[in-house]
Image (cartoon, rainbow, N blue to C red; front, side):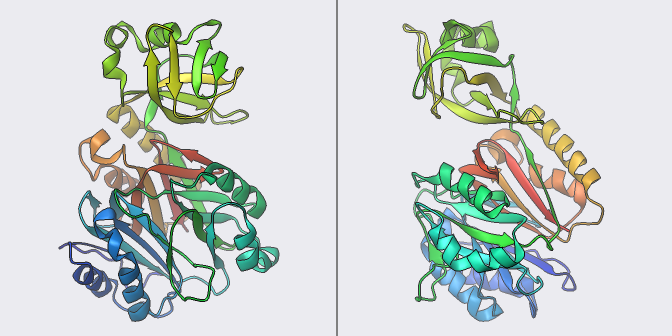
Length: 385
């Protein structure tokens, strides 16, 4: 079992532990957190090996620390100040001391924002929100619209990710009922931060464009029939090069579609998986509905380029930060981590290079949330200043 914690005099205290015994792992985190008097917000991320014990874990943490407000979820891996724990029973915990009334939890949203308005409408009217740390159930059919509507309605920049699990999908949240519980699933939940909480955030891509930006000229739902007036597969083969074009079996998990975001001043794009290729008919199918006239490019997953992009992103973020961060949350894609970089601690090492041993927690998600959209293959870092 391993643990780590921040110095006790800071407003952000982080701890982590591994072990299949949820009780021992939770107690190890509590021991390493040390005194948390005055802390009023808890962040909790667990791997799916502990998902069935989610209620017991957060109940113990609430009872011992006295912190009633907890947010977080489950991932295939968790990240902490001490390291990355991937595909093993583990948890990462952070206790935070913030000014009273500077944040507000909101309960699970599944179809609309009514639970948010009931729980935090008055608070939003009084304070407003600059940032929302959110967690989401990937099974929620309304997720994309909930993310966009929440960002717009609360005028907040969203950061977070979707749960990743082979079993249960718990979120630590305010349940919105009188049960006093703190675990739910099925939608989107999180915490709003008032503008008085100074933050900085950045997103790094895990894929590199390998061809020019093109235009979809014929489509049907998520099937791309033509690109630039030519059969889609013909253009695809041209962009990926003859080596891969001669053996299309090799493109699975390596080549993805990139959907440029209209109006983005940073040339941002959404990465979506290829899910089918029809060599005879010449069409492609991707994991996102598309429309005729929409822009598209193709990307390649590459560990070296992803690391280079992350270092560039961190360097740019560091220039924007005028004081050392007090705490951090990092959400990364499950397709990054050891499967992309080899070393499970590669991303954490790059964050340390830029910002030192800042107290940090996070998780490996099935999808990442930044601003008002769902991403894939990205890493989202948020610094509290």
